[in-house]
Structure formats: C-alpha cells, structure tokens
Image (cartoon, rainbow, N blue to C red; front, top):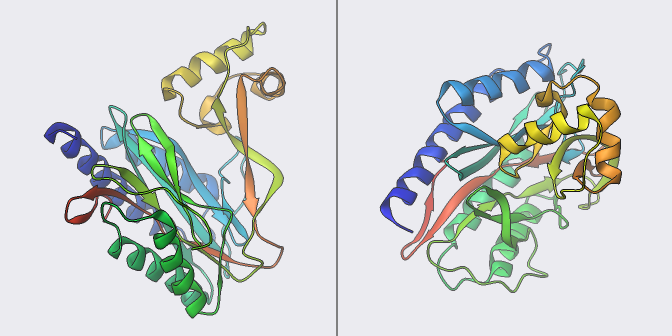
Amino acid sequence: MNDNELDTYIEAGRVAKTVLHKCAAEIKPGVGLAEIFDMVMDEISAAGVSHSFPPNISLNNCAAHDTASPDEERIFAEGDLIKLDIGTHIDGYIADTAVTVDLGDHASLCEASRAALDAAINVVAPEVVVSEIGAVVEETITSFGYKPIINLTGHGIARYNPHHGLSIPNTGRFGSAVLREDMVIAIEPFASTGSGMTHETPRGEIYQVVGDAPVRSPAGRKIMKKAEEMHGMPFARRWLNVPKAELALPTLLRQGNLFLYHCLSDVPESFVSQFEHTIIVTADGALVTTR
C-alpha cells in the first residue's frame, strides 16, 4: 500500500466516522427512518465523498440489510434498538463503520458488541488467523450473557469492493484465513438476545449488479445505467428515483442482472446490537480508520 492509498483510506474513514456519529445523534423517538437515510446520504455528499453502499438502518431483531424504501413511513419509538451501518469511499477506497443507538434499556447488549469489537482490534496483527479474532468476539459477547451471531461476519475490503476476500467470523469455530500486512478489513461483532443465527426475511431494499444480460425495458435500462454510478457496489431502491422501477426490478432479478439483499433477522422479539470499524493491518498491529 503506497502513501496515497493509505491517506485516502484514512480520509474516507474520517468522513465515515464524522457522518456516522452526527446522524446517529439524530435517531430519537418520533424521527422517521427515511429522514436518517436522507441525512446520511446528504452528509456524505456534502463532505465531498461518495457512499459505498446504502445506509443500513436495521431495527431490533433485524441485524443487517434493512434500509428506507421509496415510500418509507416507519418512525423510531421508545424501546427500539437501531443499527446504523454506513460506508463511504474516495476514488474506490472504502470505509465501513456502524454503531447501535439504544432507545430502550439495552445498554448491556450494546456494550457486549462494543467491547467485543475493541477486544478483536487488539489481536489484529500480521499472521493472525481469523478464527482467533472470532474466538475473542465470541468469548467477550458470551461473557455478557448474549450470543454472537455466527452466520454474520466481518470481511475484507478492496477498492470498489466493500466485501472482498476473507471473512472475519464472530465465533472461533471456523476461519482459517491469515491476516497479512496492508490488508483492509472490517470487524463487526453482532450480539443477540435471540438464537445467534439470522434468517432472510421477505423485505429487501438493497440491490447489486451481478450480471449483464440484455435489458429490454426502458425502466430496466435506466436502472442499470444508474447502477453504473456505484461501480458495482450495492445501491438502494430509494436512491434510484427511476419511474416504474418497481416493475423493472423483478425482471432484472429473474434475468440475473441484479442480486437482492434481504433483511437478515434473528428470532422475533429478540434484539441485536452491532458495532463496526474499518482496520488496516500494519506491521505493528491495527490502524483503525474509522475511530
């Protein structure tokens, strides 16, 4: 990694951190989910950088991949637990970070994932096997009396690719990949009061281009052209602003042009917390770009 790449990763992380905490502070009872989505997008744009995926705004037992729809009407309420996960990039160099906002009495659950993240960062170094990171995450979360979500992981990051290469597990039960100097990774422990496993729900608002089959409909062509602006990274239906998108999207999915990220949830009535940082593996350990 050259000095320019390093500096760009650090700047993307600085912006992501600033936007994340500014927008998280506005999540309160009575505020709309759509309002926070739009605020994140506006703040990222105002900072002169780009988003690397739609802001994930996931409530209560939903751990990931929820976001505002074009006609979003949900309002945050007392007792909610909200995961705000955002990504920025500068010329493809990505920062990915998340925080949990507690509108109820979930302080211990939040601290479990926050402490797990800090403990995991402390073991990051070249030649560390990723299962060692997962073991630290699992041990920390279970010490609080909760379960790590074992089928969600952290991940490698590459230019224009927010999920690249290795996975960083939240359990010590798997993961044989080895960290190398200059790797860019995201660690994101999820702590749950439920089963510790997520499942796909019918809801899905986030898409990604995965194929190039011919597209016949004008709306479909507009969607694919708009998606090109994301350089292959995920985008939200709310961001498209394409007339008749709701008619074209199912066809693009059937043809294999797009992939749909369904919301990932633990069992009903459970709660999930998440914290996340982007890290560059250095000779001395870890450089956290989003802290």
